[in-house]
Length: 370
Image 1 (cartoon, rainbow, N blue to C red):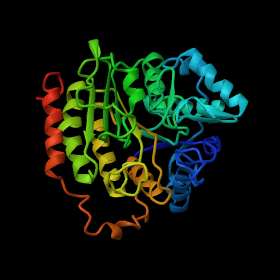
Image 2: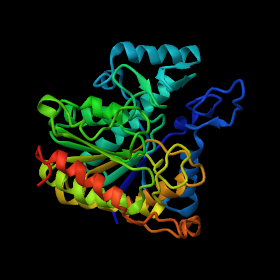
Image 3: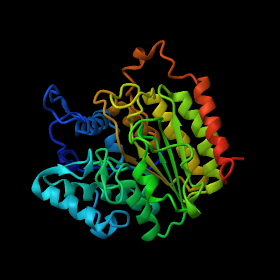
């Protein structure tokens, strides 16, 4: 059993994305059905942990708000001020689909602070690993632009914090959200000290990002690895990508800390993706990353919540991740598993295997593939 910290705050559930229809503004023929990025998936995840008894066995940490200086490790001062002004005003868009409500600025500081708190606890040995239930999410946020429900880039800020304030040199970020982590990629595109790997659905949001040939620039060339997988990829396809690409990259990079942008929107029921990962798939992916962390960085691993929009299924996927992080087994089973009968979510298809081989060939030019 591992000592796992869980970072959350009631304020995270109070970030107001307003009325919506998934990500559209209601009006005309579009009826309101609730914004996709609402508190429910996160709240129900925490509720499930409390109901199962998992929550009481974790190390509970309260996040400390990130300072403006820490936010500006990545974001411009003009953008930070814009988010604050919109928050004070009460509503607005900080860029592209990055809604700001009353008080969202302060909550976003706390959300980034949650990732920082998790990293600090793991690096300083207060716990073995950690999960931050950060909201609003962060991986789409660019230095000067909010995007895709994200205001401040929690993981990028936490990585900068680990290097600037905790003295780490090599950090690996793996992003398994169904959408490409464009903001995090931008943060470290020229940086050879941060290995960024994104597994995402090909051709999804944001358009034109996360391509196989996007490998970094300058000294950072080869330290960005994009793994755009075909729609319909399930547990076997993701595990094959981890084994064939992520594992050898990790072995050669030798990170001192692994950060996971943990978006559970590649699940089989998610309305904003077309992938087929199950709760058991997320458990296996987490176990794989734990083994890499144990081998290369004394188990130092932090997961930070990103996307995931199925209110019924995200709680079970996220619960499975924390079970695996902690090594604590509860009696929670996937109640939807019977619905997958006959669905080829466990099969590695020819197209998935060919895509992974294509990516390996691109990165044979660099350091991470033999």
